[in-house]
Length: 102
Figure 1 (cartoon, rainbow, N blue to C red):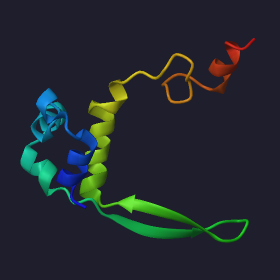
Figure 2 (figure 1 turned 135 degrees about the horizontal axis):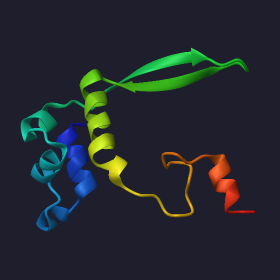
Figure 3 (figure 1 turned 90 degrees about the vertical axis):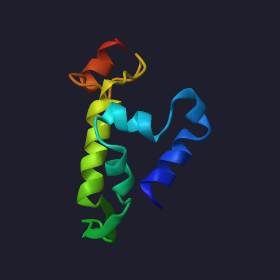
Figure 4 (figure 1 turned 45 degrees about the vertical axis):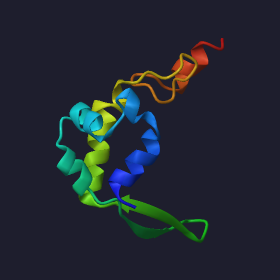
């Protein structure tokens, strides 16, 4: 599946609300052509587990990994979690979570 089709699936019918490939490229500060040329592909690696069996790791190709990091840092990293969620916030830990329960 190409990245363009994947993004269309994510945005659905939201193009009329400004949710389109051009808007994503603008927010990521990269070109539409760069977005469209990114292939969504993963390499499968198997790593043995101590308890037996294997752990399957699906690693993105280098260009896709770079794009994923850009999305994380420029878009998702700016989003705030619900106040009750502390596990995904910077400078928060299980201790931070436990304090509000004491």
